[in-house]
Amino acid sequence: MLYLAPAFNESDKPTLTFDDVSLYHPDDSVAVTVGGTGDVELWQDLNGNTADDGYTAVGASSTGNFVGTFQGGSVVHIPQGVLRGSTNRFYVSVSGDRFAPSANVALDRARTPEPVLTSPSDTGGGDFATEVRSNPWDMNENTDVAATFNTTASVHDGQLFGAIGGNPNDPVVVMDLGARQIDATLYHKVVFTASYDGPFGLEDAPGGGLVGRIIWRGFDGNHQQVSYPFVVLPGRHTYVIDLRTNPAAALVDPAGNSEFIGWGHGWTTFVDMLRIDPHEDPGGRSWQIDDVKLLRDETVSPTFDIGFRDDSYAPGTTATIYVDTNRSTADGLGTPIASGITVQPGQNTFTWNGAGVGAGAYFVHVTMQRAGRSATASSSGQVSSGLSGYGPPPATIAVVPPNSSPPGVAPPAPAPTAAPAPSTGPTPEQITAFYRFIIFVKFVCGVARSRNMTIGAAPICNSLLGSWAPVRSRARRAAPRHRRR
Image 1 (spheres, one colour):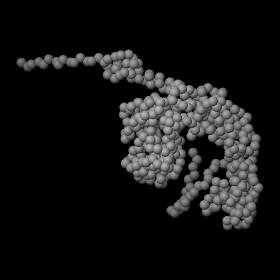
Image 2 (image 1 turned 30 degrees about the vertical axis):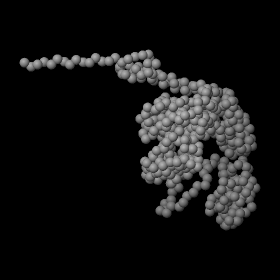
Image 3 (image 1 turned 90 degrees about the vertical axis):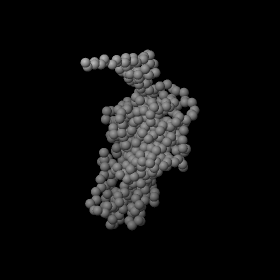
Image 4 (image 1 turned 60 degrees about the vertical axis):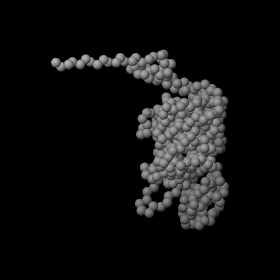
């Protein structure tokens, strides 16, 4: 964790604005001689055009960097971490007059590489609503949402608009599954774009409660699971919540659940209800959602393009690519699939055909080397290779009428829909989940029969253990009464 805590001892606090934050490697600095006399502003131009760099009154633009105010005639040592891309020119400004810029300062070849993996990504992969429901949750029509609660909501202009209504700290948005159930062993990444009005706050008081939750329900209409809260922000942002965790129940909030199952496991191997609770502000606030996706991993089908770049590129950089079953680098980088790749400026691509590893879902690591220095980056998402059912179109399953509903949420009625796409066969995860379910049910049926409970005669118990009828207990005769003589 890295944080900056500005402290001001005066009662009248100033306004503090951050334009850019970086963490620099302690490379050798660049010496810049500042011209002029008195206090002068030192600027860095990043695109060869000093006119669009910005002003101190409004802040620097994305093409410029205000380094600071220095004494004319002095030498300023600037960390190489300030250098970006291929254009880095410095100039001074006095009272708004800009002087001629310096020559371009090239990045030092000895500087440490800064690798970035752009794919696989946590926002990549096929979308459930598009592939299975055959209609994305893009908020272009009312049918994208099955129901809303505790809010005054409407869909128009490509967004779901929510305002205060009902219980102000518990707005609910239930997604329309289109008479399908979610294969939770396959689809596991919730990605949604939302805007929030009002100030930021996390307190349990009006103006606070800027946290959201994801809630889902198992395929039998029971076993509702509530996620831990995640922080949301004022303004427009995209949020990514990976519901697949290890262990499966790691995302389940102990304060909001009576059982801990998780996503894509046991009773939630298939999911019949998915909802988003946008915030928990007890004062209520307006919000908008304009896109929701439930994504699976990207796939090698038959190849996959791994994307990467060096944000401090210099000639002579090479890369080695690894695939790993987890994102951590503390336990190694996994299996190397390519080495000695010459890194070019900007975006680079390596096409992988899945060779070198067995079937599974993999994170990607890339290690870049240059002039004796190296650095490693990891992908934000996974790519699956050789897994049956992981490519489009996935298998689907019709909704099972629920036995019960979560508090305050009525499940959507199944709507007519097109026939599901042909199944490519169950995945290994689905097979494992199915056998676990069968073993669990057989155990429950066996215990019920041993205790002569009528549930032991349920149709599924008879299918698994054979026909059985509970033994009726004989009525007890009343003990004879003795008359007193």
